[in-house]
Amino acid sequence: MAAGAPQVSSGCGHRSLRIVGGRPASEKNWPWQVSLQIHDEHVCGGSLIGNRWVLTAAHCIYGHLDYTVKIGDINVKHTSTTAVKVPVQDIVIHQDYSPFGTIKNDIALALLEFPVKYSSHIQPVCFPQKAFEVQAGTECWVTGWGKLHEKDSKDDVPELLQEAELSIIRYQECNEILKKKLESISNVVKKGTVCGYSALGKDSCQGDSGGPLVCEYNETWVQVGIVSWGIGCGHRHLPGVYTEVSVYKDWITDRMSLASSQDSAAFLLLPLCLVLPLGILATP
Image (cartoon, rainbow, N blue to C red):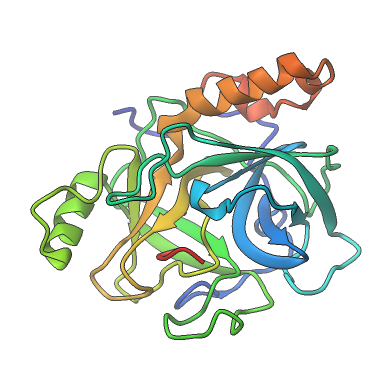
């Protein structure tokens, strides 16, 4: 659909200068990266989209548990002076999320108990316009603290945030690739998703769920995907599947506006990049 760069606010998507097959990320490279935690244990990734809002995957939410988010640190197991931990006040899962058969509407929002202060280590990521469609072949990045290898145990995960570069595949082509692999006559990848692929076997894996897939446009980073699902981790010729963020822009802004109407102070917390018109391969 829309070609070229998406229109975004200047107040988001900026940064200071191991995912399977990836490499450790540098400090301040991905200041919107969030670790969603239960009892101080990492369970999923997420992205900061406002000073009280985190975007993640619906399949990361296991019910009425006490979640916290950690942001501002690339080390998931130790807390530096730049890091902030914030309890989650409420979570909204897409009303039409389905984990059965073909995963659909794998998206959720977490409202933090109090706003975080932006710094060189903590910044929100930007969003594309609703009509924006990231083009096939675009080189983008996925980040997270998930397993480095498919056969690793759930406890054998990196302490440092990992990053990997992927090439975008549109959902139609991705569907044909995965249908063939699964020997399915039904569509397994549908509109509302986008896929990422690396010929070098770079990929997201368990523990990366809910994390961001971001692309750079005019020196501004835009989140185009949320880590959702795939077949194993790091298999050559098998792309990973990501919820396509632009498709859900109205859902995100509507839910945030509803929260604003219920909290007279919440209007101050809407991220600039959403006010303007505008990346597991298995459940962890």
